[in-house]
Image (tube, rainbow, N blue to C red):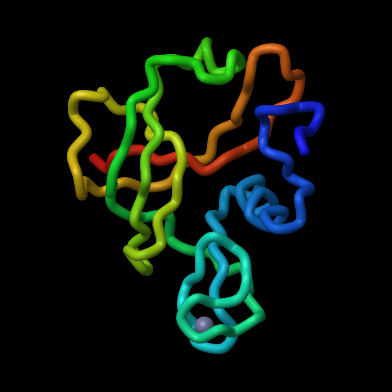
Length: 144
Ligand SMILES: [Zn+2]
């Protein structure tokens, strides 16, 4: 269900509440299986490797590589219009490249993006026109 501050993330939604709480403390948190120890993302049991039903939020380094990306030039949702163009990227985490996190790739000329380039997390407020509040979100910058 859409909440009042859409398209801001709903930081109280149970499955991702800890993720957003971590971001507010500038920590990137990913779930890890209590039984086999592997990272499991999206944060929803069961573990796809061993079937374990308990996942624990674990802080990761925030380092990774750019797996893929899209440059958005069209606002499919009107609230995104002010941000155009922007880059939505898929980042393979250093701890386990099979874990790929979707977020904004920021502070980088679009034409300089390359597959597998090293990136690291930064924490920035997500803001949208017409929405009063903001949410701190993990985004990625290319490493220099
Ligand atoms: Zn497992």
